Amino acid sequence: MDNKNKFDLHYFLSDASFENWAKGLNKNDITYWNNWIHNNPEHIEIVENAKSIITGINFNQHYPSNEKIDQALASVLPKVDITSSTKTKFKNTHTINRTIITAAAAVLLVLISYTSYSYLNNSSTTNHKTNFGEIIDLKLPDGTSVVLNGNSEIWYKKDNPRLINLKGEAYFKVKSIPSTNAKFWVITEDLKVEVLGTQFHVNTRKQKTNVVLDEGSIHLELKNGEVTKMIPGEMVSFSNESKELTHQKVDTETPYALWRGGTYAFNEIPLKEVMYNLETTYGVKVQYESEHLKDLPISGGIPNQNLQICIAAIEKATGTRITNKENILRVQENPIY
Amino acid sequence: MELHSDETIWYFFKKGESHGFSLLFKKYYPQLHVYGLKLSNNQELTEDCLQNFFIQLFENRERLGKINSLKAYLFVSFKRRLIKQLQKKQNNIPISEAQLFKTNFTFSIEEISIKQEIQFLCTSTLATLINQLSPRQKEAIYLKYYSEMPTTDIAEVMDMNYQSVLNTLQKAIKKLRIASENQQIKTILKKS
Image (cartoon, rainbow over all chains, first blue to last red; front, side, top):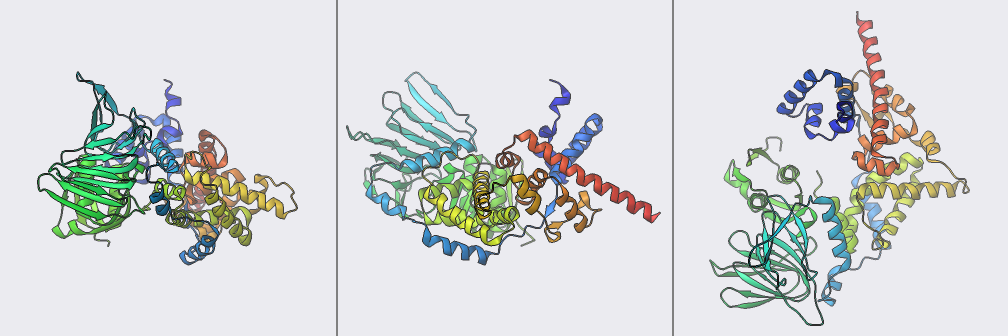
């Protein structure tokens, strides 16, 4: 490749470490790029240009005040015809809302670098597995969509693609087959989920299984033989080890399984729970400077498509400082707050 | 760092939830408001147009296809709508975008702050210099540094390819840098 063409503006601008150098942010990056420039003096002009583009111009943004925005919103809201979607949800229990699916699918296409693998072994089992921090969008042979979160696995026999084994965390949009009333099952270490057409979320981490139902209706068959029915907006947790079963109402406005769209949504969840999510999806370890930090509450959405962004959002939401050293995250007090 | 990503907001908006509408409105009303003011120089027209824009966006939400970048999509569609309104106001005389930018797109001294790169210019000089840039250069600078838009989005809003956006930005910044360097030399000469 022609070197002159390779080192164009785009080459430098798309490199995160170059951006750090230009902004004087990261010691390693600064050393690296200073050396690079020393060894490649012929590119100094383009390096300078790229640097100027990154540093750019500082504007004081004069945006309308919050009161003005709220006023404008208040005057617009009566003019839009907003129907509460939760009401319609209950009505068509066994149909899958098409618009939600396309929206969710489109989002996933943008966010996810697709690196799944499927393999067959001797007993003709299909297997899908994700690495840490990876989310994949799958279509099962019967038309059911599955979004598999990081560090998770599903497998099923080829001759029965509606009987799924799950380890980790996944979101299911089950395709209903009205003609035969064919059922769909998800099996975890703790329980079995029996489904008609529906949308739900299963998480088997933490030595227990959480199931959150968005739409439709499902039956859970627990390992101890007990059967329980779920209604939309409900979360059921069961651990085979402790034999503990809990029903809990979850916030349907921000679905529990929103990680599939690139965001974890939390409602007054203690920091330690959130960090546990990071440990399981990204394979990092978390340490706390002091015990009380573990219980800081987090509300709102945390973007999860990238560990760096995720950490920055959590720091902001809790007013802590989190450093990442060789995959060990250290949570500290932030003296600024 | 915002708590709700565009993907989340768009997901709820398309679902037709009031929560989604409010999130989208609160996030993008301010940005589009300033962009509209820059384009039209007319507050009343901008605000009317912006309100209707959000209402129509909501009504048409189910017909909207796949959107790569929500921000770029909103900027482009709002710009188109605003330009149409401006034309209507001027008795349907077609106005080109370039024309608009020449007369309207200006930055005030208060909007500009100085940092290391161009520190030898005072805000008023820098404002004058930026306002003298070509219409396309001004818009690129605005979208990049005021609206903090990624280059791929700018390409979409300005209907240019990625490389042309980079070239436009580069030229604009270069002009400012050279002016800054000249100023620096002048200052040094004065001192000695």
